[in-house]
Image (cartoon, rainbow, N blue to C red; front, top):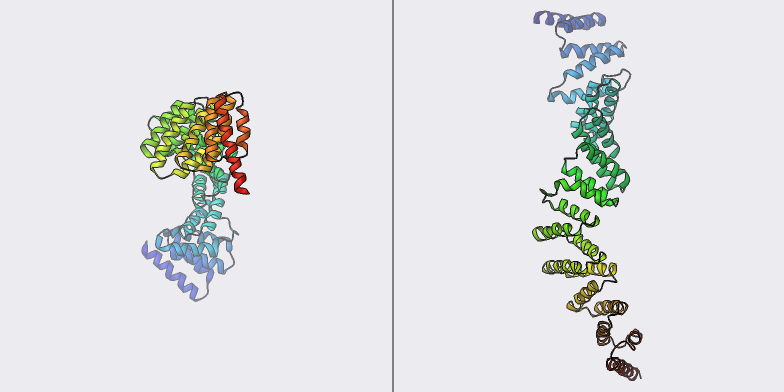
Length: 415
């Protein structure tokens, strides 16, 4: 057999020396009859058919040659042949060959070209109902362009059609993440729901879907999604999200147990605890709110985060401006930090709360402190009038005398 092949090769070369092209073609075809994978004969036929202006036959043999060059050492040659003789589209290539070329382009970091060719192959595979092969191409495209949500969605839907549930869930999850990053929260919620339906047992899917539910104001549903994982999860991100969901769903005591444990064990989760304290205050459970503030204060002061704690207390105080317990804690904080102007500001709010609540004794005590801090504040006299006939007369006169004396002293200093 080898002798026959060599004989045909020699004949072909002699024919070429005599410019007998058709006879050379016949000799090379005889070689392929005995050795269909013979690269020299295959390439020679491609060259000769191209030379004789038979592009269709040339493309057939160049395509076969491309398929033969599977050894990594020949990949550059394979790409060169495809680019020169096959890529023009004059002769449609089979999708397997297009996908192979796309893979080589991917290996050479030519991402755009690889995506174009994988897309073409995927469309041809789909048209031929070769869904697994189409899915292979779509998965490669998604890997090459991971920030493109449309590509992730197409992969997810293709995988779901042929019951590749795990792959479909991952692709829907990625599409949902990208939609979230782009601020498209309604689309993200739909995509993450599709991932969750396919893989409800996957913790990462459940977590991202629950976060989307929280953003949409569906806290109770978020709790339901995360609850099956709660007993065995210690990851800070998971616990933080679950705690927020419990707070917003009104399950305050359970949220407190989880979030305080997170703070104690990993020293994270302060923001959800501030949110929990606000929720307790809004529910009229002011003592619980203050207990949480105390716990946070101890931890954040130990971490040298006094300013951060004060900032969060400002937000909490403004949210709970009618809560006597919260305002008392807020005022005590600034007294401890020796920030007189902020202390004065909070005490004015506290004075008004005491008056509205009918706690006149506390209101009078607060007014005396306000006068000690800033006797020249113009509203001190108005505050005193609010106490007229509601406090002991001697106390009223003492505060009034103090204000008058300070006012006179101020006038003399001005003169």
